[in-house]
Image 1: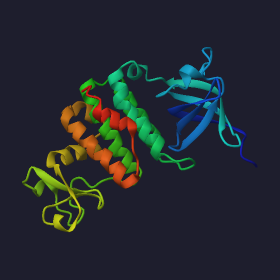
Image 2: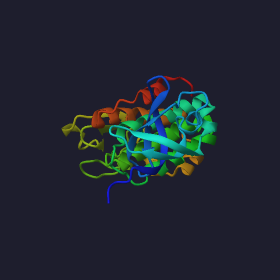
Image 3: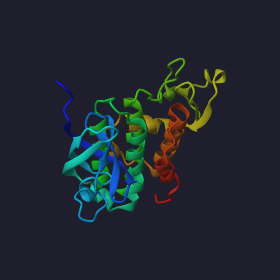
Image 4: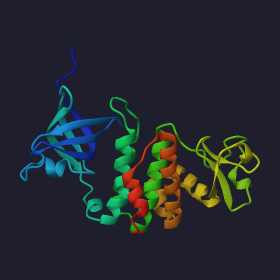
Length: 256
């Protein structure tokens, strides 16, 4: 049997690109964690149902027809619009890096288990989280994304000798982007490393291992969340060649 001409997919809309006069190319995270692009014909017309069902941040069920280069979206059913998030400019700034990082790290035809539900959960928590909590949710998602992709930084133990960061007494700690994470003082001389606040690595470890419910309840200080995001941003650039404009804008927006 051949590959079916049409198929249904649960999608999260990550990006929209104008095509011709009224069409859009949609960059989508599929329910299996892979990336896809599809054309939504007439999506920019005022009467098109695509405008609300395939907007940024929307989770929808879509009928897709396989095309030569791009699939074609037809029937859509909205599952979650995340309207509360989209109506809050501060939340949009905090949530946009999630879409941007997914668009840059997910790959076509390469499913990643749990990626879609993790993204969905992060956005749902951002729908009603207090504004001061939003950066910590962005940080938690970003670290969990790195873990799912197999490039999780070592945050609590030395990448060389395995000693715990808790054994260090200094306020500062060493971190090596080339060698995978935290390096203790005894091992640091052999590595190219930077100095970071030790508490930043401890906060990052907490965000990585906590559920989103726990992150909201923890009320991580805003300055600590941004310190973690700066580390994540550099980690992405150094190890994955990922430059997220949305994350850079969050770090410089001055809204928190």
